[in-house]
Length: 428
Image (cartoon, rainbow, N blue to C red):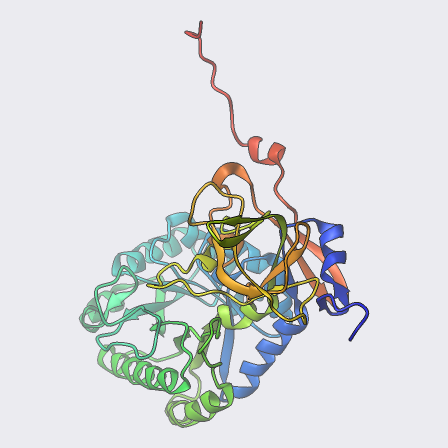
């Protein structure tokens, strides 16, 4: 057995990282980011572009690393747009989507010259036309997000085929020809459809893609428009839990060859986009938290850690009927035999602050480090980081065996600096 069996990330011991940057913290492994991007890029048919969905992890260094290796960017807020641009992503490889874009958002898109604004209502399309006219920017490229009439297959969270705040119902798009022809400063170049998330069966992704491509082709014919862009979503899943199987990317690529190849033969100049967030980043992240107390209550062992669902809300199991545990490892003794059953909680004053429930681990003592794995997606920015004013944790990127602080930990003074104490003249 190794004399130092502690968990290491590119040769760096978890305890070393914790001593340098404190806990709790998120650690991202750039080797895994590169592996995931390479894995899907090599599997997909030639001509399908991978865009990174910043909503999964908007850290500028994560975006910059993936962008430097060929990923475009799919953004959904003004800050995400600025993040992608500052990270070095070419505006020609950025799309902006989201159902509630403001005029300021659209103005920023036009000014930046991004690849396309993905419009999610006809009213938004008209507003974009007004914005482009006011800014004298020529014809602004737009894509219509369609809420298809067909249901998705195999998604843990379906995003189409039923009433949704996202996109424009397919039948409404089919009736929009007159409006599209009236636009003077916007050119609708194609369509977008996102059918759901956490797909783990490649056959479901292939079936959904086939349906989306057929729909896009049919809509373009009916609306008498040239088809220049089709974004057929993504939503590729990660096997977080026991009894789940990893998505077979080789089978996925082989399954897409026929539908994509046939489509490209008819539309050789049409850009095809797959947008991915969780698939690219989840495996790369570890949430590192330190045990503060170990206690027993009515026969059940609890580890109370210094970080919890305030940083990792996904671990609660939101949207799941039964909570399932993310993979957890004792970072000091990752290879040791599990001997105890622990429920690991954070520091919050709520019973919902449970990171894992009744997990088998080696003995945990106060001061030990625990790692929640597959935590690189939907971590701090999808969590209530300001609850109880604990603030957001540090984030670290490990690349070529070197750890870089890529987000500073919130401090009390920084959090309070945005607040202002009112003057109460009637105070006694």
